[in-house]
Length: 546
Image (spheres, one colour):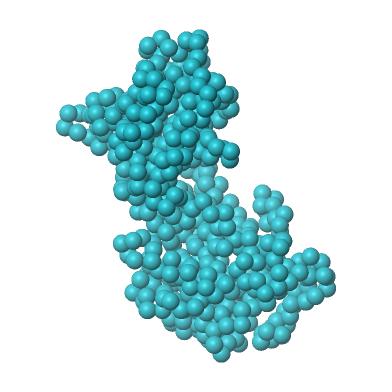
């Protein structure tokens, strides 16, 4: 029987344990010195398996995909962890294993292979309260990748598992598809074989979705497959290496999705560890390869060192499991992460605000900073939503009424000394804020001014990079809340040099967003100006009622 995961992986939910047990008895080791021997799932593989087959306590017989806690899964892991062979076991389980919810066990019920066309003699006895499973009657499955070579990372071990194990009596393996029983099949789909799209599939395994983009048309493939599976009550799974965030891949979109019914597994080391430092890199590898007992970290280090001679970002993505772009950024993300020291900011605290707005494409963000240099993303509303808005979450346009309501809450919750707001697209709102809160508090601060913006960006960059002082001087004691969205926007920011010797901030690509970073620059510039004007310690406060 499949062993329980590592103590760090706590399974405190109902799941179909029969699936990993079925896998270990039907999917032998596909190659190498142990080819044909019994396979044992690594800890991370078992964790991802039991989460994908996690069952809702309210599940009832007859439900298909709605019986499961997760509609789909995403697994992001570095190279050589065994994603390909593990993906093959999931595909085979969907093709012939007990993956369809079949009610709750009272205790003593059995799943027997003999009842489902397999004469291997294996059986599984359910414990009381276990979710039970049966196979799909007509499994139609698609295995997808960018190319034939890429899809072979999953399909080749799948072929060998079938040939070397008991599934050979119910499956016939071919070069482009595998026949399952009389009417089921596992099809291989690549960018050069899209004619198979539109079929009524029950499962899609999408490999290396970090490479699925608009340019190679695989984003449409992924979306079409998910719709096809949903129509049949089926589900899907993505596996990938870390992606380049400048490419707006399917993997990136899944990772950033707010939907609660997507299982996401993406082990990462602290951002404060530098991948360029050999000692730190060893620590990073130990974290992201945890649970992969077969991996030799010395061999991984040798591969990484060679790749990093010419393409450090690729090495960090492939082996460090980090989503980093290929060009140098304005500010080292690890330096920014090192300043994270989250704390509570009480109501009526004296603060400044930075606002960067957009309309339909870029994001809109408000960042705040206290008089002692602690920067944070405020929250608003009954559910404490962060003041960072992605227009894609609101039908393609920033919710202006929500932004105005959030600003009103912040102005009344805190003692806001200064707001620096970039007016483009928001001229009317900024004018209203000037009228409502006063022209000494709300300043129209245009980021298009190269000299001023360069100076403001350098001020924040300098205060992030240098060490904090022990004597509590504000200007050299910058810290922040560790907001993940702001971290991502800081890492997305590039500096474009101009002939004058100044630079402007830009995105690495149109897909990347930097608005929370710009709001951080404005908030920090506002604080610097407030301190210079002698307003930081001003006793009287301004409070406004709603």
